[in-house]
Image (cartoon, rainbow, N blue to C red; front, side, top):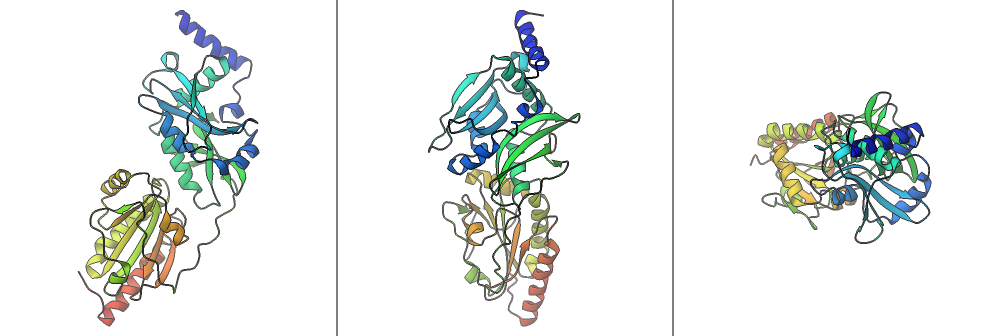
Length: 363
């Protein structure tokens, strides 16, 4: 064993023997959560923003958190500078930390040399080497599972071992309180008992009201811009579907194959679909999303989720069925535990009604 190897394992042994790497510390701990939650409203950069900024190839992010140790809010990301193919002994384990309340996040960097941080970052790197999920993937999955809840914001995530199983320890602010849960390290699925958290208020009822036209804003339609709703509803039954980008593990994995199936079967009978994707940073992200899912209907890139806010839908899989006057005849969530069947039934009922009236165009 060379001197460097001996030094590394001596530090690791010292950290474990003296108890400096406890489960609470490795996962970010519960201390200081209240201070972080209070300060989060001032952050202009998310945990995901920090991870993307710090993890410049070949570096990878291995944990991230907001913290407030009495000096103001800080956004911190641990990285392995040489990537996942290089073990902890030969890697460069660093922290990037800085003030997230300014227009730019300008972190300072520190290469770990002390026993506590070397041991903690080494364990995190080792765990991240065992999964195909990136830290950004895990944050997106956590965000997706939090969407039904009130004002959620993930502010800490770290890989760890619990009961002999690799997990991501996640802390999120929901309704101004900190809540802790775990996700499976390999799949991102929730593990164990889900904490009780306040749900979002039900969306504003839109049934019987004319739906406002989708706002393009800073986004754009993929491919040709479709005719307006006002031009379309008189001759086609329109389904407006809204969701948030990167929600593969919950609603979208179920909802969008269903929507596509409805379209492929019912478009020849008079169905028109408009699909609004919110929260994606770039048009290229949405183009890749559309290509991956082979979406055959018009898709709007809505980077600020302006439409979900205008319609009060939240960042979840949601459907709105319109009648010949552009009024909503059905609204609801269309994820796996919601009412996709109700949405489909409403579409078919409107097609039957409009077919009998002879008002549908099949082109």
